[in-house]
Image (cartoon, rainbow, N blue to C red; front, top):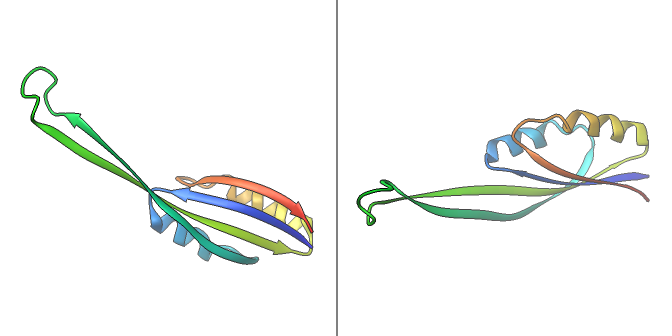
Length: 96
C-alpha cells in the first residue's frame, strides 16, 4: 500500500473545495488553521500620517492523506496536481 501526504494552502477557499471534489482516490481530510496576515499602509506618503488603509490576507489550508495500492496511480495523480494554479502544495510520498 502506498500513501501520500499533501498540505494544500490557498487564499481562496473555493479553489480548495473544487480541488478536493476532483480527487479520484481514497483519502483522509483534515483542515489546517486559518492564517490571517494584516498590514497597514499610509494613504499619502507626504501628507496626512493619520490617514491609513488596512488590508488582510486570509490563507486557508487542508491536510490530505491519500492511499492507493499502485504507486503509478499516485505518481500520475501527483503530476497532475503539481500544475494547479493558485494553490500552494507540499507533498510527501510514503510506502507503507
